[in-house]
Length: 321
Image (tube, rainbow, N blue to C red; front, side, top):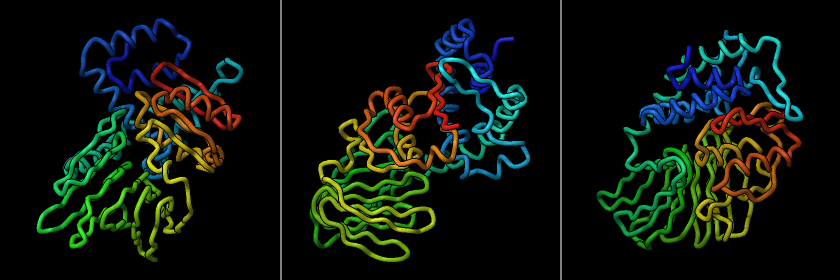
């Protein structure tokens, strides 16, 4: 019986990755109704269930005998390597995905309720704010605005944003993200909220960055990152490389593979699964195209000696095991 739902199609494609007829049926199903494409996009958006955000919702996997990261098939030398209990793992994957959809999508619903602007997948959005400042939002980024009563406050709810701030000494421009505040009078800088890591980087001018522990003043080329444990890292970079995503580039310098894949995900139309905690933590250095995430995933896999496996144009696995 042919699958009728996006989640069923994902399991079917994983179960028979070499079935060209199944691939053709899937493409026909996808093109048959715009609702099918929307459903698939929704499933693709929940890649966090099987990818980088799995630990964030670890409780949803308890008692299910492992995560999809532990059960997915991979490729070696162009051949399929199947795990002994693959069908059982796929069934667990389907059940886990269904259980986690609510966990993942409820925060998205809250995000949409709280956000004034959300940038769509694969698209950079440019905003002119009430004070004349300009903001650029990376794909799948969201902000809430408060420009009333002389305030100039932007809350970054998710993703990455670059700001070019109109000077106003009487009214500082503030960006809030995950317990970190960046405050300026007039400058150009980036703020990012990549789930577990909050970052600020300055292209020009000065930015005061405050978290629960301390305040630092950054000048052009300065950056600071605050991790999920509250630990702060600080350094310098070429100011012209700040928010390189605006030019369609991901510039990685000793960046964890997990973070690089997280930055590429909003530009990819399907699901990308990163397998292996060791691979996720490996440092990565290079320049990758955000306009061609397939090529970027392949280059990352090659640089790390990992396996890249495409089950269809919509599903990519990078495996370090």
